[in-house]
Length: 88
Image (tube, rainbow, N blue to C red):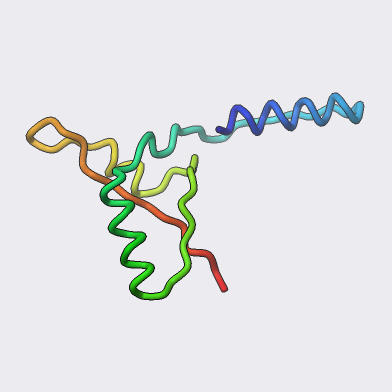
């Protein structure tokens, strides 16, 4: 989704008649897909603990991205989940 952000920045710069230089220092695909069962378990745990949570797509490179990219000895991807818990 960083490509969409860069396109938005360039379009906005063009609209306002300014120049923008973007230098990407690092780029990753983030987490490709999270396991829906793991997400449901995390959400149920938050509900039981009365903790607010938000399910969001993240392009950031979290530990979850590394774990989700691993495969088990069976060849299946490691089930991975991640949710956002907002600060108070």
